[in-house]
Length: 218
Image 1 (cartoon, one colour):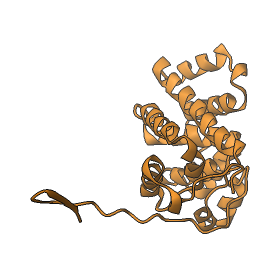
Image 2: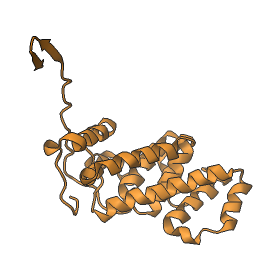
Image 3: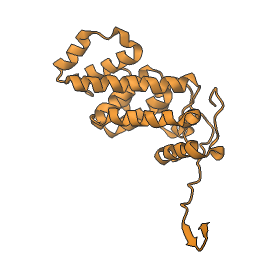
Image 4: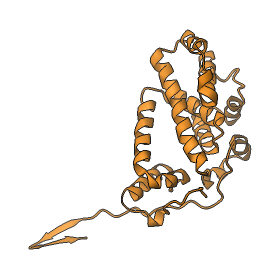
């Protein structure tokens, strides 16, 4: 349960209901993180737009590696689990857990290792990033635009996870279905919520039928 009062899905209407339904379209239920944005659904919309623009020039493997590294360093369980799960497209569970522990040999290229450590440093303390670290990324072939993308991805994850953790948002209960070793290792922050997730009914489209002098909504 969050530290602030939120609007339950069954009581949501207008912009909040629309926001809940958009998130449900992705997850199959209304996720806990969406509920704390009920007071400012426009912020969720803007975050979604920003995230889409950050992701647009990056391939999925790069985006997920950077996001996973940042989320793990930021100790946000939900994002570590969600993006660790997404990395299964490219790695085994054992390899994902090795990446979480900075054991990269035979799993990541040298360029990816430098990228992941850069993302971790941004999440941990961006004020201690050095010109040499950025220069090392260039040495691995990253362009300045790509270095910006990496930095923006890690910094954006810091915004999102810090909002959630500051307001006490717990990861959703479907994460409990993940393999126990995978789940326990990546539960780096708040524990997983054991409550069942709520699904909102999808509103039926309204059909307008016109009669003389009367509009009937079916």
